[in-house]
Amino acid sequence: MQRQPFDSGYIRRLAESDPETVDDFIRHFSPLLAAKVRRRGFSGERVEEATQETFRRVLGAVRSACIEDSQALGSFVLGTCDNVLSEMFRREIREGGVLSDNIISRAPLPDAILLTEEHCALVRRIVEEMPERDRIAIKLFYFEEQDKDEICRTLGVSREHLRLVLFRARERFEKQWKRNREAQD
Image (cartoon, rainbow, N blue to C red; front, top):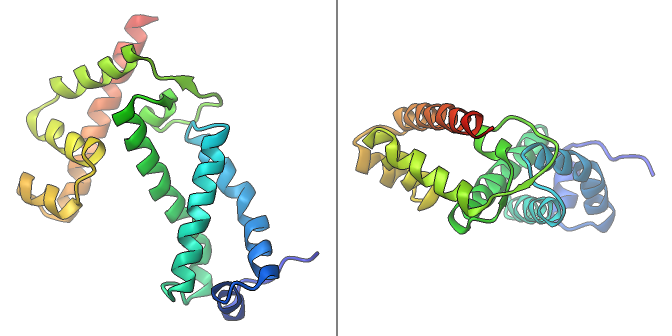
């Protein structure tokens, strides 16, 4: 079966849940999403979970007419997957579940490892030792999943500046994480 072109008719058929178009959509994006999820360090059931949740959200958005531009479909799918992965990452950190080092560092690694209580304790210790603003930003954004506007009010920064605060906090965290991991080896 030949792949259908992404055009306004494709978006309309997706919105109408045309079985052939939905199958084409899933066949096209499944391998891309699975590869993206694996690069972030998830494996097994987590790959399927992230992929299915991404499809659920994207198809819901298409059906709600949130996507009208066929040229934006690919970017929307990948961006939605990023959001799903961020939520999974924060949930795993809170619950101390299965994670890989690359989710902490965002550098691709092939295999997931079990995040032990020792790893969780190390994450908490690093966060506690960070400068106050970094610590608050990381806790509110990653652990408590607060709304960005609420975090901005708490920190007294604009949304644009919050991106920089979180970026720098993650960089400091990653640097300390690597130092600790190297010291353990």
